[in-house]
Length: 138
Figure 1 (tube, one colour):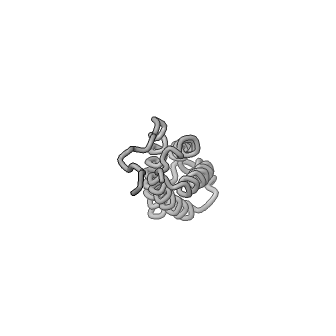
Figure 2 (cartoon, helix red, strand yellow; figure 1 turned 90 degrees about the vertical axis):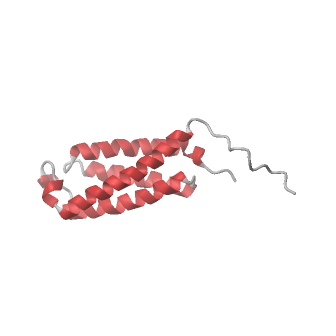
Figure 3 (cartoon, helix red, strand yellow; figure 1 turned 180 degrees about the vertical axis):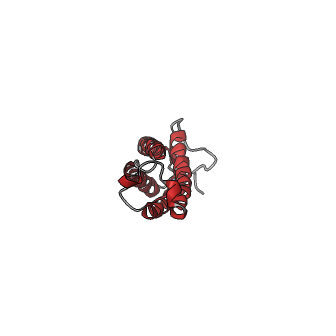
């Protein structure tokens, strides 16, 4: 008979909430990126808020980038909630890519891009500084 007790909860600290915050923001940010990408795909004129002449790519391309990155971020966010270390690593990489992509997207939608950049920075901080709190004990 095993002497291991399964009724004892794993020791966590108050910092686990930041990991959950990071994962939740990834899921919500992914959903919003997909919505914004679909808007860019369906109506190029509505998606451009300011000068469309300084856009680095065609807005259809940006739409597909937002849809693809959004879907990947949702999957990684769900993985982070399970405590998976690989999902946390992928989440940090995707949040970094999203940060860079939205930096290049500033000429199209400045307020949107700066908001997403701020959330991406918070997600990176939450996952790198406090992500290990989400690990499921074995």
